[in-house]
Image (cartoon, rainbow, N blue to C red):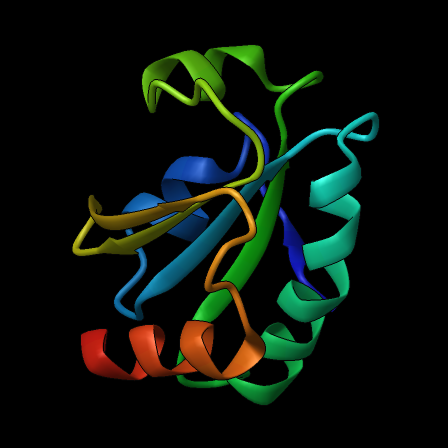
Length: 107
């Protein structure tokens, strides 16, 4: 199961992580977000111990969404060393294997 990232834990869990981090920016009302949610949860289980995988609800964490200029949902951001190194917007090309490959490449 994916972690829940909030403004309270984002710095410690994402920015200071020594592992690559996948952050799924999503919202409850977003249909495509619900489509890729289970993929993100599966990737979280498959990469436990080598990467962190979590979600940010943009409705409750508007400041984080603004900070990372999230304009479309879903947006998946890959962090390494506290910085965004890649983003994927929408659902096109988003599969569990692709997400795992991108995380492995950052390890």
